[in-house]
Image (cartoon, rainbow, N blue to C red; front, side):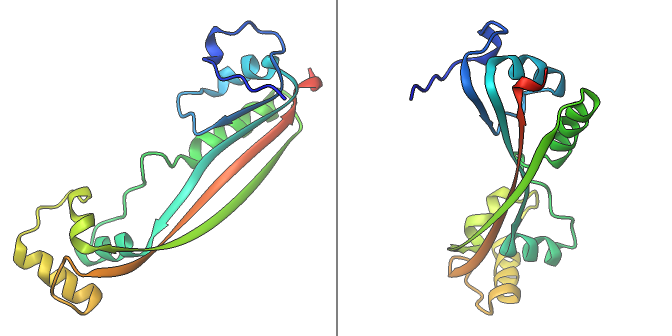
Amino acid sequence: MTYRVADWRTLPKAPQAELVFINQLPTLAPSNLAHVTHLAQHAVALNHQVKQDDTLLTAIYQWLKQPVPRPYQVDPDLMHQYADWLTAHHFTFTATSFTYTRTEQTSIADLLPDIDHAFSLSSAQQLAEALTGQSNPNALTETTITYQYQLLTWLSEQH
Protein backbone atom coordinates (compact mmCIF):
# COMPACT_ATOMS: atom_id res chain seq x y z
CA MET A 1 0.00 0.00 0.00
CA THR A 2 1.30 3.42 -0.90
CA TYR A 3 0.22 6.67 0.72
CA ARG A 4 0.58 9.98 -1.00
CA VAL A 5 0.06 13.33 0.63
CA ALA A 6 -0.03 16.28 -1.75
CA ASP A 7 -1.82 19.47 -2.61
CA TRP A 8 -4.67 18.07 -4.68
CA ARG A 9 -4.84 21.23 -6.80
CA THR A 10 -1.39 20.53 -8.25
CA LEU A 11 -2.22 16.98 -9.35
CA PRO A 12 -3.38 16.20 -12.87
CA LYS A 13 -7.05 15.28 -13.34
CA ALA A 14 -6.20 11.61 -13.69
CA PRO A 15 -6.38 8.71 -11.23
CA GLN A 16 -3.67 9.08 -8.61
CA ALA A 17 -4.90 6.61 -5.98
CA GLU A 18 -7.47 3.90 -5.50
CA LEU A 19 -9.10 5.89 -2.72
CA VAL A 20 -8.99 9.63 -2.17
CA PHE A 21 -9.70 10.46 1.47
CA ILE A 22 -10.27 14.07 2.51
CA ASN A 23 -10.70 15.06 6.14
CA GLN A 24 -11.63 18.50 7.49
CA LEU A 25 -10.74 20.56 4.42
CA PRO A 26 -13.02 23.62 4.67
CA THR A 27 -11.46 25.24 1.60
CA LEU A 28 -12.73 22.45 -0.65
CA ALA A 29 -15.64 23.96 -2.58
CA PRO A 30 -18.41 21.78 -3.98
CA SER A 31 -17.24 22.75 -7.47
CA ASN A 32 -13.89 21.07 -6.66
CA LEU A 33 -15.52 17.66 -6.24
CA ALA A 34 -15.20 16.89 -9.96
CA HIS A 35 -11.41 17.30 -9.81
CA VAL A 36 -11.16 15.28 -6.60
CA THR A 37 -13.27 12.51 -8.13
CA HIS A 38 -10.97 12.32 -11.17
CA LEU A 39 -8.05 11.71 -8.80
CA ALA A 40 -9.61 8.48 -7.52
CA GLN A 41 -9.41 5.16 -9.34
CA HIS A 42 -12.27 3.70 -7.30
CA ALA A 43 -13.75 5.90 -4.61
CA VAL A 44 -13.74 9.17 -2.71
CA ALA A 45 -14.34 9.57 1.03
CA LEU A 46 -14.96 13.04 2.40
CA ASN A 47 -15.21 13.58 6.15
CA HIS A 48 -16.12 16.77 8.02
CA GLN A 49 -17.23 17.73 11.52
CA VAL A 50 -20.87 18.81 11.55
CA LYS A 51 -21.59 19.31 15.26
CA GLN A 52 -19.90 19.81 18.62
CA ASP A 53 -21.47 20.22 22.02
CA ASP A 54 -19.67 20.95 25.28
CA THR A 55 -21.80 20.70 28.41
CA LEU A 56 -19.81 23.24 30.41
CA LEU A 57 -19.53 25.78 27.60
CA THR A 58 -23.24 25.44 26.95
CA ALA A 59 -23.96 26.07 30.64
CA ILE A 60 -21.71 29.16 30.61
CA TYR A 61 -23.51 30.63 27.61
CA GLN A 62 -26.88 29.85 29.16
CA TRP A 63 -25.78 31.64 32.33
CA LEU A 64 -24.75 34.61 30.17
CA LYS A 65 -28.07 34.37 28.28
CA GLN A 66 -26.16 34.20 24.97
CA PRO A 67 -26.35 31.71 22.12
CA VAL A 68 -23.59 29.13 21.98
CA PRO A 69 -21.32 29.96 19.04
CA ARG A 70 -20.50 27.21 16.57
CA PRO A 71 -16.84 26.10 16.72
CA TYR A 72 -14.86 27.21 13.66
CA GLN A 73 -14.22 23.66 12.42
CA VAL A 74 -17.92 22.71 12.45
CA ASP A 75 -19.77 23.29 9.19
CA PRO A 76 -22.90 21.23 8.50
CA ASP A 77 -23.85 23.55 5.64
CA LEU A 78 -20.75 22.56 3.70
CA MET A 79 -21.69 18.87 3.86
CA HIS A 80 -25.17 19.74 2.55
CA GLN A 81 -23.56 21.64 -0.33
CA TYR A 82 -21.38 18.62 -1.17
CA ALA A 83 -24.43 16.34 -1.11
CA ASP A 84 -26.35 18.76 -3.34
CA TRP A 85 -23.47 18.84 -5.84
CA LEU A 86 -23.21 15.04 -5.90
CA THR A 87 -26.96 14.72 -6.44
CA ALA A 88 -27.00 17.36 -9.19
CA HIS A 89 -24.16 15.53 -10.97
CA HIS A 90 -25.90 12.14 -10.65
CA PHE A 91 -23.48 10.52 -8.22
CA THR A 92 -24.82 7.84 -5.96
CA PHE A 93 -23.30 8.46 -2.55
CA THR A 94 -23.56 7.28 1.00
CA ALA A 95 -23.75 9.65 3.95
CA THR A 96 -22.75 8.17 7.28
CA SER A 97 -22.78 10.07 10.55
CA PHE A 98 -20.79 9.04 13.56
CA THR A 99 -20.65 10.53 17.01
CA TYR A 100 -18.29 10.14 19.90
CA THR A 101 -18.26 11.61 23.36
CA ARG A 102 -15.45 12.27 25.75
CA THR A 103 -15.42 13.54 29.29
CA GLU A 104 -12.58 15.64 30.65
CA GLN A 105 -11.62 17.74 33.63
CA THR A 106 -11.39 21.49 33.12
CA SER A 107 -12.16 24.66 35.03
CA ILE A 108 -14.33 27.67 34.43
CA ALA A 109 -11.14 29.79 34.34
CA ASP A 110 -9.72 27.61 31.53
CA LEU A 111 -12.72 28.36 29.32
CA LEU A 112 -13.16 32.07 30.00
CA PRO A 113 -10.50 33.33 27.52
CA ASP A 114 -12.44 31.69 24.67
CA ILE A 115 -15.69 33.45 25.55
CA ASP A 116 -16.44 36.86 24.08
CA HIS A 117 -17.35 38.44 27.40
CA ALA A 118 -15.35 40.44 29.92
CA PHE A 119 -15.23 38.67 33.28
CA SER A 120 -14.18 40.31 36.52
CA LEU A 121 -12.91 38.07 39.31
CA SER A 122 -16.25 38.56 41.05
CA SER A 123 -18.31 37.57 37.98
CA ALA A 124 -16.05 34.54 37.36
CA GLN A 125 -16.60 33.46 40.96
CA GLN A 126 -20.38 33.93 40.61
CA LEU A 127 -20.35 31.88 37.41
CA ALA A 128 -18.31 29.12 39.04
CA GLU A 129 -20.65 29.06 42.05
CA ALA A 130 -23.73 28.88 39.82
CA LEU A 131 -22.38 26.06 37.64
CA THR A 132 -20.21 23.99 39.97
CA GLY A 133 -21.32 24.88 43.47
CA GLN A 134 -17.81 26.20 44.20
CA SER A 135 -16.86 29.86 43.98
CA ASN A 136 -13.32 29.05 42.84
CA PRO A 137 -13.23 29.42 39.02
CA ASN A 138 -9.95 27.41 39.00
CA ALA A 139 -11.53 24.35 40.61
CA LEU A 140 -11.64 21.34 38.29
CA THR A 141 -15.02 20.23 37.07
CA GLU A 142 -16.17 17.71 34.52
CA THR A 143 -17.37 18.56 31.05
CA THR A 144 -18.64 16.24 28.34
CA ILE A 145 -17.86 17.06 24.74
CA THR A 146 -19.80 15.40 21.94
CA TYR A 147 -18.43 15.45 18.40
CA GLN A 148 -20.40 14.50 15.30
CA TYR A 149 -18.85 13.88 11.90
CA GLN A 150 -20.36 13.09 8.54
CA LEU A 151 -18.64 10.93 5.97
CA LEU A 152 -19.69 11.09 2.32
CA THR A 153 -18.47 8.29 0.05
CA TRP A 154 -18.98 7.72 -3.66
CA LEU A 155 -17.51 5.69 -6.47
CA SER A 156 -15.39 7.56 -8.97
CA GLU A 157 -16.22 5.03 -11.70
CA GLN A 158 -19.74 6.44 -12.08
CA HIS A 159 -18.45 8.99 -14.58
